[in-house]
Amino acid sequence: MDYRAFWLPKNGSTPEEYEDALAADPQLGRFAVADGATESVFAGQWARLLVDQFVAAFESESGKTTSWLLRVWDLWSVSLRGQDLKWYAQEKLRTEGANATFLGLWFDDCSEQSGRWRALAVGDTCLFHTRKDELIEAFPLTQSEQFGSQPLLISSRLSPEVIEEQRVKLAEGQLESRDRLWLMTDALAHWCLAEHEAERNPWDSLEGWLEPAATNAGFSTWVDGLRDAGQLRNDDVTLLVVSV
Image (cartoon, rainbow, N blue to C red; front, side, top):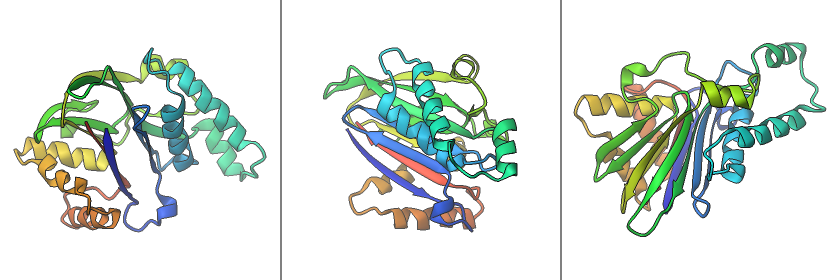
């Protein structure tokens, strides 16, 4: 399977201030996108750790998150050791922790003609399954009005068991050849659902970014145009597309 990925920070921010994250391993069939919560400390670092460890260590046979997240917690503790944190950063870590929304995707029983996708999500980072530019499934949110200012988060202050029991949502679907799976953070996901509800086809617009000549710079220009037109909220944007 092939994939393409595009990203850019919010207007007024530098690439170093980008707090989304993505990771992909087409050989393992694992893909992930996360959105670090800006108001929390080390949001980008936390988001990157989540996606990297999902792709590297997720146990797809069980679909459980606990063992994978335990690895994340261990590495997170190690990464904080020896850091000279300001008192207010220490206090934020203690009281609020690092936080991110998350979506992970993996595949089962795939052949040249069919297979199954499976996904887990926490919060409003979304997956859209399309076939011939038609939406088959939206997950975990299905309507633009469901986006809000307080999505569920994977928090470093909560145990993996609590996250799995209270926050993780699971989904799966049947694949056919040439299907697309679009993983994206909330600003772009909201735009896609709003366009779909208005009976416009966002997938047709996004399909152009799968052309070989498409670049991240061109994607950034397109996103900036949507922002300038008031159609897209000014936030970090990440798009990862898997083509079956």
